[in-house]
Amino acid sequence: MSLRMKFCGAAGTVTGSCYWIEHDKGAFLVDCGMFQGSKTLKELNYGEFPFPADKADFLLITHAHIDHSGLTPKLMGAGFRGKVFATEGTRDLLQFMLPDSGYIQEMEVSFLNRRNAQRGRKPVEPIYTSEDGEAAAEKIIARDYQRWFEPGPGVRARFWNAGHILGSASIEIEIETGDDDERIMRLLFSGDIGPDHKLFHPDPEGPSNLDYVICEATYGARKRPVLKPDARRKVLADIVRKAMGRGGVLVIPAFSVERTQELLSDLSLLMTKGEIEERLVFLDSPLAIKATEAFKRHADELEDTGEDGEIFANPSFHFTRTVEESKAINNYENGVIILAASGMCEAGRIRHHLKRRLWDEKNTVLLTGYQAPGTLGSILEGGAKTVRIQGEDIRVKAHLQSIDIYSGHVDADGVMDWMTARKPVTRGVFLTHGQAEGLNALHDRLIEAGFEKDRIIIPHLDDEVDLLGGGRIGKRMGPRRLGHEAVTDLDWHNDLAELSLDIREALEEAADERARKVILRRLRRALEER
Image (cartoon, rainbow, N blue to C red; front, side, top):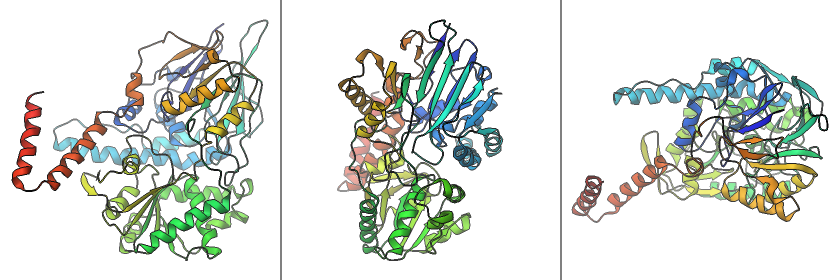
C-alpha cells in the first residue's frame, strides 16, 4: 500500500497552494494556486506542473483566492480531465475571478510583448486566457458544508467553514488504505483560516481526531489586538477624517473579495451614523464590483450585510465599471475615497491611481492587508521614497498608512486555538502557507502545547512525504524546481529595483553636475571590474 503527498506550493511561502496526493486507487489535488510575489516565484506559474496532470482524478479547492485556485485553467490545459469540487460560494466567486485572472495575464503579456519586440526578444504567451478561465469555472461542482461526498475511488471528503472569505473551507478527507488493521487515513487541510468574530462569517469550524493536519501559518508569529466591530470602525473613521483633513484623496488598495466588502460595510455604517462626513466612495474594480454583487446574492447566508445586502447600497457609493468611468475619477483633486484592486498593488487599476496620487503630499494611501515580499505594496510599506510604476519613477510623498485590523487570517493565538481544537492528531502536523518566522514560531508553540516535536514538519517546495510511514520527508520523484532560499528570499529583480531607486536618489541629491559624474564613474568602474 502506498500513500504519498507532495507539497507543490505554499511551502516556505504564502502563495501557490497546491498538494498532490497519490494512493493505490488513484491521485488527486487539493488546491491549484498561482504563485505571487517575486519574479522568480511567479515564473513557476509558467513552468510544467511537478506532477502528471492527466493522472489526477479530481481537484478540491479550499477557496476562491487566486493563490489557491488560479492555476486551475492551466491544469485543464495540461491534460486534467477530472472533476473539480468547491463550496457554492467558492464556485460563484470563481465564475468571474478565473476569467478576470486570465484577462489580467493577457493584458500583462500584451504589454510585455510590446517591450520584447522593441528589444528584439521573442513574444511570450499568457498562462491562460479569459476564455480558458470561463471554461474552467463552468466545470466546478458545488458541495454543501459538512456533507460527505465521494469525489473519486477510495476517497470521501467534506467541507468545513473556515471563516476566511465567502465560501472558504477547510477540507476533511478520508482515504482507504487497504490495510487490515487500519483502512482509513484521515487528513484535514486547513485552507486559510479566518479569525473569530470576523465580519460576515461565523467562527471557523472543523473536525477532531485526525491522522494529519496540514495547517496554514500565515500569521504564526504575529498577534493582533482583538477589536470589536465598533472599535475597528473607530480606527477607520479616524484615518478617513485625517485623510480628508489633509485636503487630498484617500486611496485604498483593497483585495477584491472580502476586504473590499468589509471596507464598504464599515464606511456605509460610519456615514449613516454621522461618524464621518458623507463622501463619494469610488469602487474602481470590475472584479470587486462582481464580488460585491455575489455577496448580495449570498446575503441570507452571511452576517452583517443587512437584508438583501442593503449595506452595499449606500448612495455615496459609485461603482465604476468602464475605463472611461475610471479615468474620470482623476478629475477629483480632494474629498473622495478610492477603493481599487489589487490589494498588494501588483495589477489592475490601483497602479494607475497610485501613479496619479503618490507624488502629492496631500493624498493618503491606506494599506489594509498582507503585502507579500517583492510586491509594490510591500515596497511602499517598507518606506520607499521612489517607486517604479508602468516604467516611470514616481516620488512617494503621499501619507502612507498600514493597518492590520481587517485581516482575513487568524493570528498566532487564533491558529493555536484552532489546532488545539483538532486534537488528537495522531500522526503529524505539516505547517505550510507561511514564511520562516511564522512557520518556526508556530512550530515551537505547538511543541509547548503538547504536540510531539518529531511529528511537526515544515516542508520545502516539492518535498514528498510517505503518509503511511509517519509523514517523513522522503526521496522526490523529480528535481526540485527552486532551492529553498530562492523560494523564501527576495530575488535579484527586487535588489535591482531597489538599487535603481537608490542610484536615482543619489544622483538627484548630489551637489552639482560634477558630483553626479563622479557617482556614475564609480558605478561604471564597478561594472568593469565584475
